[in-house]
Length: 94
Image 1 (tube, rainbow, N blue to C red):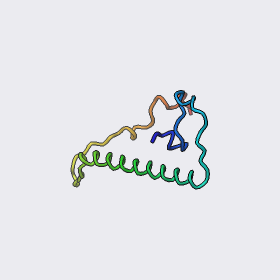
Image 2: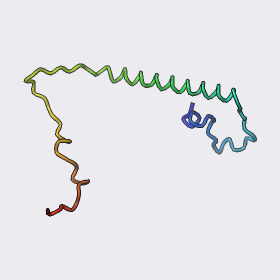
Image 3: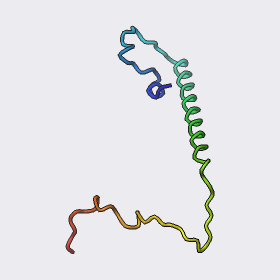
Image 4: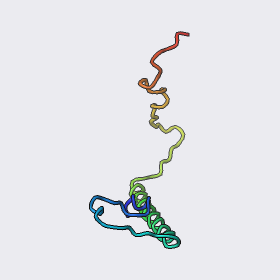
């Protein structure tokens, strides 16, 4: 199912299908059932994709344990302050 169809509940109209006359009209319970089924399929596909991505990430993941006295690296990027390019350009003399 295409993202457009999942969002709007109908296939995307392209120049190839402009020559087709008329559209299927759906009302009431049929529309609700079809939409509910499409949402269920989209959620199932998203869950499967997330599980697949998690399994790929977990293959290389390992538990890290540190003891008191262990030497570790500390990333100092946020401890230095804001980026100079976004800092104030004028410094107040007071």
